[in-house]
Image (cartoon, rainbow, N blue to C red; front, top):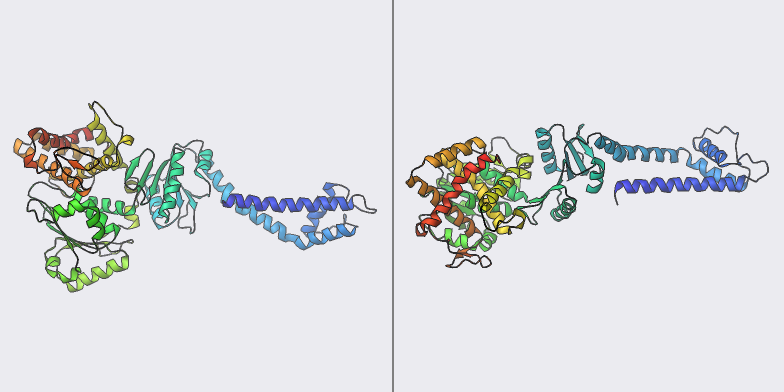
Length: 517
Protein backbone atom coordinates (compact mmCIF):
# COMPACT_ATOMS: atom_id res chain seq x y z
CA UNK A 1 0.00 0.00 0.00
CA UNK A 2 1.36 3.44 -0.95
CA UNK A 3 2.00 6.12 1.69
CA UNK A 4 -0.66 8.27 0.03
CA UNK A 5 -3.33 5.59 0.52
CA UNK A 6 -2.20 5.02 4.11
CA UNK A 7 -2.48 8.74 4.85
CA UNK A 8 -5.96 8.92 3.35
CA UNK A 9 -7.09 5.92 5.41
CA UNK A 10 -5.75 7.40 8.65
CA UNK A 11 -7.39 10.77 8.00
CA UNK A 12 -10.65 9.05 7.05
CA UNK A 13 -10.61 6.94 10.22
CA UNK A 14 -10.01 9.99 12.45
CA UNK A 15 -12.76 11.99 10.75
CA UNK A 16 -15.16 9.04 11.01
CA UNK A 17 -14.48 8.70 14.75
CA UNK A 18 -14.92 12.45 15.21
CA UNK A 19 -18.24 12.37 13.32
CA UNK A 20 -19.44 9.45 15.46
CA UNK A 21 -18.68 11.40 18.66
CA UNK A 22 -20.63 14.39 17.32
CA UNK A 23 -23.64 12.26 16.41
CA UNK A 24 -23.68 10.51 19.81
CA UNK A 25 -23.32 13.86 21.56
CA UNK A 26 -26.27 15.30 19.63
CA UNK A 27 -28.45 12.22 20.22
CA UNK A 28 -27.79 12.19 23.97
CA UNK A 29 -28.16 15.97 24.50
CA UNK A 30 -30.71 17.30 22.01
CA UNK A 31 -33.83 16.27 24.01
CA UNK A 32 -32.43 16.56 27.54
CA UNK A 33 -33.88 19.19 29.89
CA UNK A 34 -31.56 22.16 30.31
CA UNK A 35 -29.29 21.08 27.47
CA UNK A 36 -27.70 23.73 25.26
CA UNK A 37 -26.77 21.31 22.45
CA UNK A 38 -29.72 21.12 20.06
CA UNK A 39 -28.09 20.90 16.60
CA UNK A 40 -25.06 19.47 14.86
CA UNK A 41 -23.66 23.01 14.76
CA UNK A 42 -23.87 23.21 18.55
CA UNK A 43 -22.10 19.83 18.84
CA UNK A 44 -19.32 20.96 16.49
CA UNK A 45 -18.91 24.25 18.38
CA UNK A 46 -18.73 22.47 21.72
CA UNK A 47 -16.20 19.94 20.39
CA UNK A 48 -13.96 22.67 18.96
CA UNK A 49 -13.86 24.83 22.10
CA UNK A 50 -13.27 21.68 24.17
CA UNK A 51 -10.54 20.27 21.95
CA UNK A 52 -8.80 23.63 21.83
CA UNK A 53 -9.17 24.01 25.64
CA UNK A 54 -10.76 27.46 25.19
CA UNK A 55 -13.88 26.50 27.14
CA UNK A 56 -16.21 29.51 26.84
CA UNK A 57 -18.88 27.73 28.93
CA UNK A 58 -21.78 28.90 26.73
CA UNK A 59 -22.48 25.32 25.69
CA UNK A 60 -22.05 22.24 27.85
CA UNK A 61 -23.54 18.74 28.14
CA UNK A 62 -25.97 17.84 30.96
CA UNK A 63 -26.53 14.12 30.46
CA UNK A 64 -24.16 11.46 31.80
CA UNK A 65 -23.50 10.22 28.26
CA UNK A 66 -22.89 13.76 27.02
CA UNK A 67 -20.51 14.46 29.89
CA UNK A 68 -18.63 11.21 29.16
CA UNK A 69 -18.24 12.29 25.56
CA UNK A 70 -17.09 15.68 26.77
CA UNK A 71 -14.42 14.00 28.89
CA UNK A 72 -13.21 12.08 25.81
CA UNK A 73 -13.00 15.31 23.82
CA UNK A 74 -11.21 17.05 26.67
CA UNK A 75 -8.70 14.21 27.04
CA UNK A 76 -8.01 14.28 23.32
CA UNK A 77 -7.53 18.03 23.57
CA UNK A 78 -4.84 19.34 21.22
CA UNK A 79 -3.56 15.86 20.53
CA UNK A 80 -6.14 15.25 17.84
CA UNK A 81 -5.60 18.61 16.21
CA UNK A 82 -1.86 18.20 16.42
CA UNK A 83 -2.13 14.81 14.75
CA UNK A 84 -4.49 16.13 12.09
CA UNK A 85 -2.31 19.15 11.41
CA UNK A 86 0.77 16.92 11.21
CA UNK A 87 -0.94 14.55 8.82
CA UNK A 88 -2.18 17.47 6.75
CA UNK A 89 1.28 19.01 6.56
CA UNK A 90 2.78 15.61 5.72
CA UNK A 91 0.18 15.08 3.00
CA UNK A 92 0.80 18.51 1.49
CA UNK A 93 4.59 18.13 1.51
CA UNK A 94 4.58 14.45 0.54
CA UNK A 95 1.77 14.36 -2.01
CA UNK A 96 -0.07 17.58 -2.74
CA UNK A 97 3.03 19.78 -2.92
CA UNK A 98 5.00 17.58 -5.33
CA UNK A 99 1.90 17.05 -7.47
CA UNK A 100 1.35 20.79 -7.75
CA UNK A 101 5.02 21.23 -8.60
CA UNK A 102 4.80 18.64 -11.38
CA UNK A 103 1.60 20.09 -12.80
CA UNK A 104 3.38 23.41 -13.19
CA UNK A 105 6.23 21.64 -15.04
CA UNK A 106 4.25 19.64 -17.60
CA UNK A 107 6.21 21.11 -20.51
CA UNK A 108 9.59 19.91 -19.15
CA UNK A 109 11.27 16.53 -19.52
CA UNK A 110 10.61 14.17 -16.63
CA UNK A 111 13.19 11.61 -15.56
CA UNK A 112 11.44 9.22 -13.20
CA UNK A 113 13.71 6.98 -11.09
CA UNK A 114 12.30 4.16 -9.00
CA UNK A 115 14.85 4.42 -6.16
CA UNK A 116 17.22 7.05 -4.82
CA UNK A 117 20.69 5.60 -4.28
CA UNK A 118 24.31 6.23 -5.25
CA UNK A 119 23.96 5.08 -8.85
CA UNK A 120 20.65 6.85 -9.47
CA UNK A 121 22.07 10.02 -7.93
CA UNK A 122 24.88 9.92 -10.50
CA UNK A 123 22.36 9.45 -13.31
CA UNK A 124 20.18 12.31 -12.02
CA UNK A 125 23.18 14.66 -11.85
CA UNK A 126 24.06 13.73 -15.43
CA UNK A 127 20.48 14.41 -16.58
CA UNK A 128 20.44 17.83 -14.91
CA UNK A 129 23.83 18.63 -16.40
CA UNK A 130 22.54 17.81 -19.89
CA UNK A 131 19.17 19.51 -19.38
CA UNK A 132 19.04 21.92 -16.39
CA UNK A 133 15.29 22.47 -16.87
CA UNK A 134 14.36 18.80 -16.56
CA UNK A 135 12.57 17.36 -13.54
CA UNK A 136 13.96 14.45 -11.51
CA UNK A 137 11.26 12.39 -9.82
CA UNK A 138 12.30 9.81 -7.22
CA UNK A 139 9.53 7.35 -6.41
CA UNK A 140 11.22 5.84 -3.36
CA UNK A 141 13.80 7.60 -1.20
CA UNK A 142 15.22 5.67 1.73
CA UNK A 143 17.77 8.47 2.01
CA UNK A 144 17.58 11.94 0.53
CA UNK A 145 20.80 12.36 -1.42
CA UNK A 146 19.79 15.32 -3.61
CA UNK A 147 17.96 18.60 -3.14
CA UNK A 148 16.96 21.42 -5.43
CA UNK A 149 14.09 23.01 -7.28
CA UNK A 150 14.18 20.26 -9.94
CA UNK A 151 14.02 17.37 -7.45
CA UNK A 152 10.63 15.86 -6.59
CA UNK A 153 9.90 12.87 -4.36
CA UNK A 154 6.52 11.34 -5.04
CA UNK A 155 5.42 7.79 -4.41
CA UNK A 156 2.93 7.20 -7.19
CA UNK A 157 2.56 4.74 -10.04
CA UNK A 158 3.67 5.37 -13.65
CA UNK A 159 -0.02 5.56 -14.61
CA UNK A 160 -0.59 8.35 -12.07
CA UNK A 161 2.45 10.22 -13.44
CA UNK A 162 0.99 10.03 -16.94
CA UNK A 163 -2.30 11.40 -15.57
CA UNK A 164 -0.49 14.31 -13.92
CA UNK A 165 1.49 15.18 -17.05
CA UNK A 166 -1.40 14.62 -19.41
CA UNK A 167 0.44 12.11 -21.65
CA UNK A 168 3.61 10.00 -21.73
CA UNK A 169 5.57 12.31 -24.01
CA UNK A 170 8.68 13.67 -22.33
CA UNK A 171 8.73 10.95 -19.63
CA UNK A 172 11.66 8.55 -19.29
CA UNK A 173 11.46 5.91 -16.61
CA UNK A 174 14.58 4.41 -14.98
CA UNK A 175 14.61 1.31 -12.80
CA UNK A 176 17.86 1.40 -10.82
CA UNK A 177 17.17 -0.28 -7.49
CA UNK A 178 19.38 -2.89 -5.82
CA UNK A 179 16.84 -5.67 -6.49
CA UNK A 180 17.50 -6.48 -10.16
CA UNK A 181 14.44 -8.70 -10.56
CA UNK A 182 12.17 -6.05 -9.05
CA UNK A 183 13.71 -3.54 -11.47
CA UNK A 184 12.77 -5.77 -14.38
CA UNK A 185 9.18 -6.26 -13.18
CA UNK A 186 8.70 -2.52 -12.65
CA UNK A 187 10.24 -1.78 -16.04
CA UNK A 188 7.86 -4.14 -17.82
CA UNK A 189 4.90 -2.43 -16.14
CA UNK A 190 6.09 1.05 -17.16
CA UNK A 191 6.99 -0.02 -20.69
CA UNK A 192 3.57 -1.64 -21.00
CA UNK A 193 2.05 1.82 -20.63
CA UNK A 194 4.15 3.09 -23.53
CA UNK A 195 6.73 4.94 -21.41
CA UNK A 196 10.34 4.94 -22.66
CA UNK A 197 11.88 2.70 -20.00
CA UNK A 198 15.48 1.87 -19.07
CA UNK A 199 16.19 -0.95 -16.66
CA UNK A 200 19.32 -1.94 -14.75
CA UNK A 201 19.11 -5.72 -14.47
CA UNK A 202 20.75 -9.00 -15.38
CA UNK A 203 17.53 -10.35 -16.88
CA UNK A 204 17.39 -9.88 -20.62
CA UNK A 205 20.36 -7.52 -20.42
CA UNK A 206 21.87 -5.98 -23.56
CA UNK A 207 18.54 -5.84 -25.37
CA UNK A 208 16.99 -3.09 -27.47
CA UNK A 209 13.32 -3.88 -27.95
CA UNK A 210 10.50 -1.41 -28.43
CA UNK A 211 10.44 1.08 -25.58
CA UNK A 212 12.06 -1.23 -23.00
CA UNK A 213 15.86 -1.12 -22.81
CA UNK A 214 17.67 -3.38 -20.37
CA UNK A 215 21.28 -3.12 -19.23
CA UNK A 216 23.55 -4.70 -16.69
CA UNK A 217 26.12 -2.80 -14.67
CA UNK A 218 28.88 -5.06 -15.95
CA UNK A 219 27.87 -4.33 -19.54
CA UNK A 220 27.96 -0.56 -18.98
CA UNK A 221 31.36 -0.78 -17.27
CA UNK A 222 32.91 -2.93 -20.02
CA UNK A 223 31.51 -0.84 -22.87
CA UNK A 224 32.66 2.43 -21.27
CA UNK A 225 36.08 0.99 -20.45
CA UNK A 226 37.02 -0.15 -23.96
CA UNK A 227 35.58 2.99 -25.48
CA UNK A 228 37.41 5.39 -23.17
CA UNK A 229 40.63 3.33 -22.85
CA UNK A 230 41.27 1.95 -26.34
CA UNK A 231 44.26 -0.32 -26.87
CA UNK A 232 47.10 1.67 -28.41
CA UNK A 233 49.28 0.44 -31.25
CA UNK A 234 52.25 -0.04 -28.91
CA UNK A 235 50.27 -2.31 -26.57
CA UNK A 236 50.70 -6.01 -27.28
CA UNK A 237 50.16 -7.73 -23.92
CA UNK A 238 47.12 -7.16 -21.71
CA UNK A 239 46.86 -8.68 -18.22
CA UNK A 240 43.48 -8.98 -16.50
CA UNK A 241 43.50 -9.72 -12.77
CA UNK A 242 40.09 -10.57 -11.37
CA UNK A 243 37.20 -12.97 -11.06
CA UNK A 244 33.49 -12.44 -11.19
CA UNK A 245 30.97 -11.18 -13.72
CA UNK A 246 32.53 -7.76 -14.39
CA UNK A 247 35.95 -9.26 -15.17
CA UNK A 248 34.32 -11.84 -17.46
CA UNK A 249 32.33 -9.15 -19.26
CA UNK A 250 35.45 -7.00 -19.71
CA UNK A 251 37.25 -9.93 -21.30
CA UNK A 252 34.31 -10.91 -23.50
CA UNK A 253 33.70 -7.41 -24.85
CA UNK A 254 37.43 -6.81 -25.24
CA UNK A 255 37.85 -9.93 -27.38
CA UNK A 256 34.87 -8.94 -29.55
CA UNK A 257 35.77 -5.25 -29.90
CA UNK A 258 39.58 -5.23 -30.04
CA UNK A 259 39.95 -6.90 -33.41
CA UNK A 260 42.52 -5.09 -35.53
CA UNK A 261 44.19 -5.31 -38.92
CA UNK A 262 46.13 -8.45 -39.90
CA UNK A 263 49.50 -8.52 -38.17
CA UNK A 264 48.32 -6.64 -35.11
CA UNK A 265 47.45 -9.19 -32.46
CA UNK A 266 46.87 -8.92 -28.71
CA UNK A 267 48.01 -11.42 -26.10
CA UNK A 268 45.62 -11.64 -23.12
CA UNK A 269 46.68 -13.12 -19.77
CA UNK A 270 43.80 -13.67 -17.34
CA UNK A 271 44.36 -14.42 -13.66
CA UNK A 272 41.31 -15.46 -11.65
CA UNK A 273 38.52 -17.99 -11.72
CA UNK A 274 37.75 -18.38 -15.44
CA UNK A 275 35.61 -21.51 -15.13
CA UNK A 276 32.36 -19.76 -16.12
CA UNK A 277 34.05 -18.03 -19.07
CA UNK A 278 35.49 -21.35 -20.23
CA UNK A 279 32.07 -23.03 -20.16
CA UNK A 280 30.20 -20.13 -21.79
CA UNK A 281 32.70 -19.45 -24.59
CA UNK A 282 33.96 -22.91 -25.45
CA UNK A 283 34.76 -22.25 -29.12
CA UNK A 284 36.51 -18.95 -28.47
CA UNK A 285 38.62 -20.53 -25.72
CA UNK A 286 39.47 -23.50 -27.93
CA UNK A 287 40.51 -21.23 -30.79
CA UNK A 288 42.31 -18.42 -28.96
CA UNK A 289 44.08 -20.67 -26.48
CA UNK A 290 45.47 -22.72 -29.35
CA UNK A 291 48.43 -20.40 -29.90
CA UNK A 292 47.68 -19.42 -33.50
CA UNK A 293 50.45 -16.92 -34.45
CA UNK A 294 48.03 -15.15 -36.83
CA UNK A 295 45.39 -14.40 -34.25
CA UNK A 296 45.02 -13.01 -30.73
CA UNK A 297 46.08 -15.39 -27.99
CA UNK A 298 44.40 -16.06 -24.68
CA UNK A 299 45.97 -17.55 -21.55
CA UNK A 300 43.57 -18.42 -18.71
CA UNK A 301 45.90 -18.98 -15.77
CA UNK A 302 44.86 -21.13 -12.83
CA UNK A 303 47.73 -19.89 -10.65
CA UNK A 304 47.81 -16.55 -8.85
CA UNK A 305 49.34 -13.66 -10.76
CA UNK A 306 52.05 -13.31 -8.10
CA UNK A 307 53.62 -16.55 -9.40
CA UNK A 308 54.22 -15.00 -12.83
CA UNK A 309 56.40 -11.92 -12.34
CA UNK A 310 57.76 -12.31 -15.89
CA UNK A 311 54.26 -11.72 -17.32
CA UNK A 312 53.69 -8.69 -15.08
CA UNK A 313 57.09 -7.32 -16.12
CA UNK A 314 56.37 -7.68 -19.84
CA UNK A 315 52.76 -6.42 -19.75
CA UNK A 316 51.77 -3.24 -21.58
CA UNK A 317 48.49 -2.90 -19.70
CA UNK A 318 47.23 -4.40 -16.44
CA UNK A 319 43.52 -4.29 -15.59
CA UNK A 320 42.61 -4.98 -11.96
CA UNK A 321 38.98 -6.00 -11.61
CA UNK A 322 38.26 -7.86 -8.40
CA UNK A 323 34.87 -7.91 -6.64
CA UNK A 324 35.35 -5.00 -4.21
CA UNK A 325 37.22 -1.71 -4.00
CA UNK A 326 39.13 -3.04 -1.00
CA UNK A 327 40.47 -6.07 -2.88
CA UNK A 328 41.18 -3.98 -5.99
CA UNK A 329 43.19 -1.45 -4.00
CA UNK A 330 45.01 -4.20 -2.09
CA UNK A 331 46.02 -5.83 -5.39
CA UNK A 332 47.11 -2.49 -6.81
CA UNK A 333 49.26 -1.67 -3.77
CA UNK A 334 50.90 -5.09 -3.77
CA UNK A 335 51.58 -4.84 -7.50
CA UNK A 336 53.16 -1.41 -7.15
CA UNK A 337 55.20 -2.30 -4.09
CA UNK A 338 56.54 -5.72 -5.02
CA UNK A 339 56.55 -6.11 -8.82
CA UNK A 340 58.56 -4.10 -11.35
CA UNK A 341 56.48 -3.17 -14.39
CA UNK A 342 56.17 -0.33 -16.86
CA UNK A 343 52.58 -1.28 -17.68
CA UNK A 344 49.74 1.17 -17.51
CA UNK A 345 47.55 -0.01 -14.63
CA UNK A 346 43.78 0.47 -14.63
CA UNK A 347 41.77 -0.28 -11.48
CA UNK A 348 38.01 -0.81 -11.25
CA UNK A 349 36.72 1.33 -8.38
CA UNK A 350 33.21 2.31 -7.33
CA UNK A 351 34.60 5.67 -6.20
CA UNK A 352 37.33 7.61 -7.93
CA UNK A 353 40.67 7.82 -6.13
CA UNK A 354 43.42 10.33 -6.78
CA UNK A 355 46.66 9.15 -8.41
CA UNK A 356 45.06 5.90 -9.61
CA UNK A 357 43.75 5.39 -13.13
CA UNK A 358 40.34 4.10 -12.12
CA UNK A 359 37.29 3.09 -14.12
CA UNK A 360 33.77 1.93 -13.39
CA UNK A 361 32.79 4.53 -10.77
CA UNK A 362 29.10 5.42 -10.50
CA UNK A 363 29.72 8.97 -11.70
CA UNK A 364 31.63 7.80 -14.76
CA UNK A 365 29.35 4.98 -15.92
CA UNK A 366 25.89 6.14 -14.84
CA UNK A 367 25.71 9.10 -17.18
CA UNK A 368 22.63 9.70 -19.26
CA UNK A 369 24.51 8.86 -22.44
CA UNK A 370 26.16 5.64 -21.28
CA UNK A 371 23.11 4.34 -19.41
CA UNK A 372 20.56 4.99 -22.13
CA UNK A 373 23.19 3.99 -24.72
CA UNK A 374 21.34 6.13 -27.26
CA UNK A 375 24.34 6.38 -29.58
CA UNK A 376 24.87 2.61 -29.80
CA UNK A 377 21.11 1.95 -29.94
CA UNK A 378 20.62 4.30 -32.88
CA UNK A 379 23.75 3.12 -34.66
CA UNK A 380 22.89 -0.59 -34.27
CA UNK A 381 19.34 -0.07 -35.53
CA UNK A 382 20.62 2.13 -38.38
CA UNK A 383 23.15 -0.52 -39.42
CA UNK A 384 20.36 -3.07 -39.56
CA UNK A 385 18.16 -0.70 -41.59
CA UNK A 386 20.97 -0.09 -44.08
CA UNK A 387 21.71 -3.81 -44.42
CA UNK A 388 17.99 -4.50 -44.92
CA UNK A 389 17.48 -1.95 -47.67
CA UNK A 390 16.99 -3.68 -50.98
CA UNK A 391 16.32 -7.00 -49.29
CA UNK A 392 13.51 -9.05 -50.77
CA UNK A 393 12.29 -9.93 -47.27
CA UNK A 394 13.22 -7.02 -44.94
CA UNK A 395 12.82 -7.69 -41.23
CA UNK A 396 12.12 -5.01 -38.64
CA UNK A 397 14.44 -4.58 -35.67
CA UNK A 398 11.94 -5.90 -33.13
CA UNK A 399 11.43 -9.04 -35.22
CA UNK A 400 15.14 -9.92 -35.28
CA UNK A 401 16.47 -12.81 -33.24
CA UNK A 402 18.50 -11.92 -30.17
CA UNK A 403 21.66 -13.13 -31.89
CA UNK A 404 21.18 -10.82 -34.87
CA UNK A 405 20.47 -7.88 -32.56
CA UNK A 406 23.67 -8.62 -30.64
CA UNK A 407 25.52 -8.92 -33.94
CA UNK A 408 24.41 -5.43 -34.97
CA UNK A 409 25.31 -4.05 -31.54
CA UNK A 410 28.79 -5.60 -31.80
CA UNK A 411 29.20 -4.10 -35.29
CA UNK A 412 28.19 -0.70 -33.89
CA UNK A 413 30.72 -1.05 -31.06
CA UNK A 414 33.48 -1.86 -33.57
CA UNK A 415 32.72 1.14 -35.76
CA UNK A 416 34.91 3.39 -33.60
CA UNK A 417 37.80 0.89 -33.97
CA UNK A 418 37.49 1.22 -37.74
CA UNK A 419 37.52 5.03 -37.53
CA UNK A 420 40.60 5.00 -35.28
CA UNK A 421 42.39 2.72 -37.73
CA UNK A 422 41.49 4.71 -40.84
CA UNK A 423 42.45 8.03 -39.24
CA UNK A 424 45.49 6.53 -37.46
CA UNK A 425 44.36 8.06 -34.16
CA UNK A 426 43.99 5.87 -31.06
CA UNK A 427 42.82 8.83 -28.97
CA UNK A 428 39.36 8.98 -30.58
CA UNK A 429 36.68 8.05 -28.01
CA UNK A 430 33.56 9.38 -29.73
CA UNK A 431 32.07 8.78 -33.15
CA UNK A 432 31.13 12.02 -34.88
CA UNK A 433 29.74 12.87 -38.28
CA UNK A 434 33.02 14.60 -39.08
CA UNK A 435 35.37 11.75 -38.23
CA UNK A 436 33.08 9.24 -39.95
CA UNK A 437 33.27 11.31 -43.16
CA UNK A 438 37.04 11.66 -42.89
CA UNK A 439 37.43 7.93 -42.25
CA UNK A 440 35.26 7.09 -45.24
CA UNK A 441 37.39 9.38 -47.38
CA UNK A 442 40.49 7.39 -46.41
CA UNK A 443 38.70 4.15 -47.23
CA UNK A 444 37.43 5.46 -50.57
CA UNK A 445 40.90 6.61 -51.67
CA UNK A 446 42.68 3.41 -50.61
CA UNK A 447 44.22 1.15 -53.25
CA UNK A 448 43.18 -2.46 -53.82
CA UNK A 449 45.89 -3.88 -51.52
CA UNK A 450 44.85 -1.67 -48.64
CA UNK A 451 41.18 -2.43 -49.19
CA UNK A 452 42.00 -6.11 -48.89
CA UNK A 453 43.43 -5.39 -45.43
CA UNK A 454 40.17 -3.65 -44.48
CA UNK A 455 38.11 -6.59 -45.66
CA UNK A 456 40.20 -9.11 -43.76
CA UNK A 457 39.95 -7.05 -40.59
CA UNK A 458 36.15 -7.06 -40.82
CA UNK A 459 36.03 -10.78 -41.53
CA UNK A 460 38.19 -11.48 -38.47
CA UNK A 461 35.85 -9.37 -36.36
CA UNK A 462 32.79 -11.20 -37.70
CA UNK A 463 34.33 -14.61 -37.05
CA UNK A 464 35.45 -13.56 -33.56
CA UNK A 465 31.93 -12.46 -32.65
CA UNK A 466 30.47 -15.77 -33.77
CA UNK A 467 33.18 -17.74 -31.98
CA UNK A 468 32.27 -15.99 -28.74
CA UNK A 469 28.74 -17.35 -29.16
CA UNK A 470 30.00 -20.85 -30.02
CA UNK A 471 29.42 -20.94 -33.76
CA UNK A 472 31.43 -23.46 -35.76
CA UNK A 473 32.19 -24.18 -39.40
CA UNK A 474 29.88 -26.25 -41.56
CA UNK A 475 29.48 -26.39 -45.37
CA UNK A 476 25.76 -25.84 -44.80
CA UNK A 477 24.39 -23.01 -42.71
CA UNK A 478 22.27 -24.00 -39.71
CA UNK A 479 21.35 -21.14 -37.36
CA UNK A 480 19.75 -23.41 -34.76
CA UNK A 481 22.93 -25.49 -34.46
CA UNK A 482 25.12 -22.35 -34.84
CA UNK A 483 26.96 -23.51 -37.91
CA UNK A 484 28.09 -21.31 -40.78
CA UNK A 485 30.09 -21.88 -43.97
CA UNK A 486 31.98 -18.57 -43.57
CA UNK A 487 33.64 -19.58 -40.29
CA UNK A 488 36.92 -20.00 -42.18
CA UNK A 489 40.13 -17.98 -42.66
CA UNK A 490 39.86 -14.93 -44.90
CA UNK A 491 42.21 -16.44 -47.48
CA UNK A 492 39.72 -19.26 -48.11
CA UNK A 493 36.78 -16.96 -48.90
CA UNK A 494 35.49 -16.46 -52.41
CA UNK A 495 35.97 -13.02 -53.95
CA UNK A 496 32.23 -12.41 -53.63
CA UNK A 497 32.29 -13.14 -49.89
CA UNK A 498 35.37 -10.96 -49.43
CA UNK A 499 33.58 -8.05 -51.07
CA UNK A 500 30.72 -8.39 -48.56
CA UNK A 501 33.20 -7.51 -45.82
CA UNK A 502 34.02 -4.25 -47.61
CA UNK A 503 30.47 -3.05 -47.08
CA UNK A 504 31.10 -2.73 -43.33
CA UNK A 505 33.55 0.07 -44.22
CA UNK A 506 31.52 1.67 -46.99
CA UNK A 507 28.67 2.06 -44.55
CA UNK A 508 30.63 4.83 -42.77
CA UNK A 509 29.33 7.26 -45.40
CA UNK A 510 25.73 6.19 -44.77
CA UNK A 511 26.21 6.55 -41.02
CA UNK A 512 27.46 10.13 -41.48
CA UNK A 513 24.69 11.01 -43.96
CA UNK A 514 21.97 9.81 -41.60
CA UNK A 515 23.39 11.83 -38.69
CA UNK A 516 23.17 8.99 -36.17
CA UNK A 517 26.48 9.89 -34.51
